[in-house]
Image 1 (cartoon, helix red, strand yellow):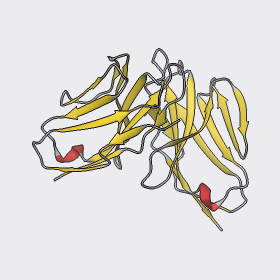
Image 2 (cartoon, chains in turn green, brown; image 1 turned 120 degrees about the vertical axis):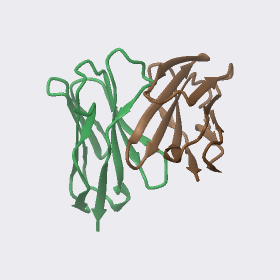
Image 3 (cartoon, rainbow over the protein chains, first blue to last red; image 1 turned 30 degrees about the vertical axis):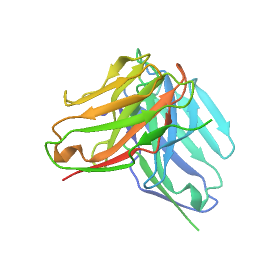
Length: 113
Length: 111
């Protein structure tokens, strides 16, 4: 079992729709969770971080964390073509410093006009 | 603040050679981490340095090494290059218990 798994893509949604990206992790002691966006040929850029159970909203983005189910998700409301990118879920495992992120394989999102 | 910078941005080497990549973190950030990104394996953690000490190490062979200087700048070295070392090498910096910010990466091609 991979340490961090993301829902298989690619994911295609129409402009204006909600895109839902999911991620599960195997280490129950994981403490910190991040969503990064990576455009083709570019480096990952941070979208959201979440540390506690529940929802965290930032503009059109909402991160949801459920530690009991070892599940973290990212919702993108009113999706725009500029949101088309690879979305990476990253986790800091228990007993590890913040300098060591474990990434999922990424989900490719395409938002079509 | 200036972001994380990496040099060089592109590099072409042949098998058996060695290579050194450089990373300058965001000002004030003392933790520097290195990652390898390939289409097949995705983003994988190489190592992390904090205050000139390696704090974490990923599951890579000893050909991959790194160091950090007193000004927090970091270098990573790959010796005896193999074709499979072709990848995007990313450096990220953070300020202790904080999120990591990535540099633009160094694209290494091994022929």
